[in-house]
Image (cartoon, rainbow, N blue to C red):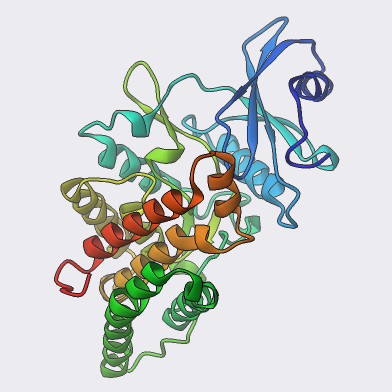
Length: 342
């Protein structure tokens, strides 16, 4: 079964088998570029969520199911409880959460709710089963690894930028120069401190991270509390990357004051156990921001999942690509507010 051919009858049949109970109806919900989710109305009992994962060579199902099983086992109630899975069908069954997509109507306390959840996660770092969790997707454990990921993503976009003059102008005129300055400052700071930027972060200073985390993957319940979904990238990562990714994630589009509040709260939590956290945060934040600019621009890559998602939405692809470029420009301006070249 491919990622595009699951139907409502398929979902009903798979859901009935996994639940061991009859499914009365299946309705598509929360479709996205990476998966498809069905709301299953059970003949008896509360609804369940059936999630169908893409067969793209990465074990998204296993990573998410293991993560949510770990969180559920340790009493986290704001993430879905796993019910059953079928790896051969690329499907898993979870608790269904009602609620509105949080990103549609942001609230003043969203940054605090995001921070509360991430801080609560860190209390499980030494819990049973934590050391068996995988590394987060695209995890980074050294400054040089961050630079390498930035350069790898940049190279991919450079190869297609000859066909997109506006893309090339932004990258070569704004993104690349400002990030080059940030990288020089990072290496100079590490040299001053006698630290090796290629050395991996000690496991004791790593964080549990949802990786792809923010309002775009949150539902708001009737009481205003956020519940969090989509943990396909969950695992161990540098807490600086966790803080940076959450603060600048374009899916959340947090106001500056909210992003700063989030950074402040998470920084206090991580600084308490890692005296080098603030140093890494200050030099790595702009590099992680540059990586996110490149992720936003993935839609320019012909074979990317982002490109396929935009194409599936219909409309003029050229216009949609221009929209992604504008988003990257705005994000770059947020990361480098004093860059006159933007």
